[in-house]
Each structure stands twice: as C-alpha cells, then as structure tokens.
Image (cartoon, rainbow, N blue to C red; front, side):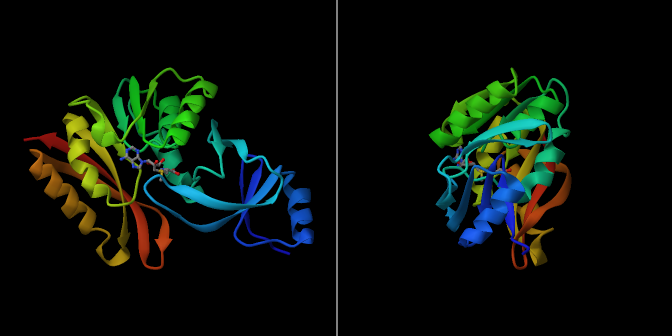
Length: 249
Ligand code: SAM
C-alpha cells in the first residue's frame, strides 16, 4: 500500500487520517503503541506540535538514535526527523575539554550526542519550554552524562559571559536576533553553529552578511566558515547551518 510514516521510538506519526485497514497494516509492520497525525504546521517559538491520536493513548516514548536515548512526548514536543544528519555531524564536531553553550537545547537534540561523543568539559544546555526542559534533564540521566548543565530559561536572560569555545544556535526563526547573545557567550576565539532558513538564491550570501554584521557590532571578526544544508525547508528554501569561526578584534 506504500503508506508513508515516521517512527519515533515506538510511536508512529502519519500525515493523513487512516482507515482501520491502514491502522492494522502499520500495527503489524511496526508493533507501535500509538499512531498520531500532526494536524497543523508546528508554530511558535516553543515549537509545540498539534496532534490527533489515531490509535492508542500513550504518547511518551524513548527514541534511539546514533547510540543516544531521547525520551520525548511526541504530542507535546517536536522531533525533526529531517535534522538527523545534523545531529550526527554535531556529535563528532567538538573537542575534548571544550565549554559549549547550546542556546536552544530542546530535549537535548544536539547536546546529548555532542556530550557523549566529543567529550566536552561542560555543555550549558538552555531551554525555555519547561516540558522540553524536563525531558532534557531526564535525557541527561538516561544517557549517563555528567557534562551537561541544563538551564530552564530564555537564553537572553542567562548571564554566562566569555565562557564558550562553541555556541550552538539550533533554531530557525530570526536566529540572527540572538547573535548578540551568542557573542556574549563566546570566548575571545570560538565557533558559532548558526542555523537559518534561507532562499536557495541567497543561501551563500545572507547568512554570512548577517554573521559579519553582528561580529563587527560585537568586536569580533569572522576568520573562517563553511555552510551546510540541513534539509529542504520549503520549495526553494533551505534550512542551512554555518560553522563560523570568530576572533575578538
Ligand atoms: N535542533 C532540534 C532538532 O534537531 O530537532 C530542534 C530545536 S527546537 C526547534 C528549538 C528549541 O528552542 C525549542 O525547544 C524551543 O522551546 C527553544 N527556544 C526557543 N526560543 C528560545 C529562547 N529564547 N531561549 C531558550 N530556548 C528557546
């Protein structure tokens, strides 16, 4: 029948309502405990999904990816399957002993794999949605990590100046508006992983202009950068990430 679905832990997410035969088919194939459908685009800065349960009633699960465990309630928190490659890339990107600030930590999408595989000294994982924060704390526990400090706050209210070798900005809504804060976290020399959604035509221009503008404003200069495509976001629009290295003037 070729039904399209996404499996997060033992929960299946589909894009349309299903007939009882289709539900049966998915249950047979996946042995899932619940099936749900997103009813609207995920919106707002807390990235809360809107869902309809088509089968079952339990929506909390543990998803395993790249050897990491992510406990999540898929009816309350988003899981972006499209970011799987970026979560893997970030896992290995850090250097042992670094200090990292993850400004939009969610349930630990980037912090957990980075803490596990790159062995930084400390990751300050900041998340303002209390439900995501609760899962972030649980995920630190179930992955047996002792190098993540979860902080439940709007990152703009967190006072950690000049401490980070690396800042992760895994958020795509006017991310540039948070760059002043990212430079406040950054040491005299460091890396910012800057995410943005951008039209393909200006993909190599606009994010770099923005990074240079905010670097200048904060007395830094851009020394090196690479741009990577994370996923297609909309027709002609990409979710990209720039690995940008800076030094203080
Ligand atoms: N990168 C993730 C992935 O791989 O699936 C998705 C990150 S999620 C879209 C972004 C998170 O940033 C959400 O959990 C949201 O609550 C949080 N957030 C948004 N604005 C914030 C702010 N000002 N301070 C702290 N957290 C914020």
